[in-house]
Length: 194
Image 1 (spheres, helix red, strand yellow):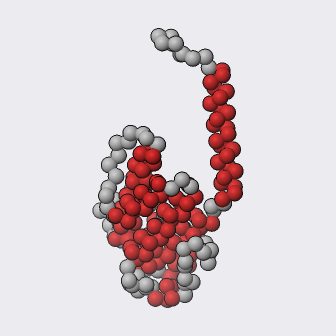
Image 2 (cartoon, rainbow, N blue to C red):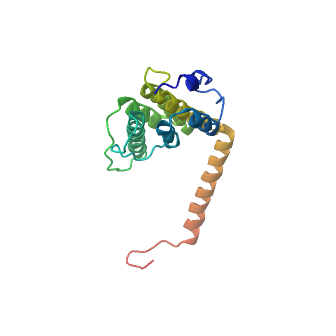
Image 3 (tube, rainbow, N blue to C red):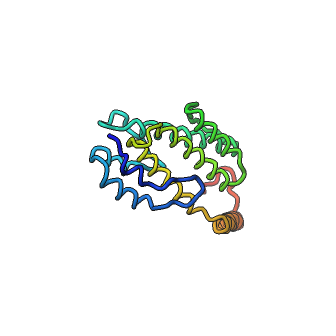
């Protein structure tokens, strides 16, 4: 089914700019204008799609592609972060889709958590564009629009100064706990019960 009326009235979205509406408002609008079989999937649109059962009846390819891409990104991020911390991790991270793997490697190499998150979200945006396809009036375009709204909402929550202050506070409390714990707890001698 073509959703020309719905898609034609939507304001354009640009990565890094403010969202023109909330994801909830969009869901309400789209839910009234889409076929019920397509609208039911609006509630499945999420940055973290979780595990998707590909045998689920009527599951759009859009969600299969998004789930596969996000899973690959997250597994490769975990592998990259473990390597950076010099920890052994026995994780089978897929080598496909290549753009998810590349984004994870690039983000893992960054020192700034904020810059890493921005890079990851920009890669997500590009992936969503590819899953949408070329038909701007297809249901996939509607799902892509909603996911992009969710990314813009997520980005609007990033507050550099507040995040850095929170990080410093957490780091200080961890260091204090380590120092206090080291002072309070006598060293355990070999063979002594704890």
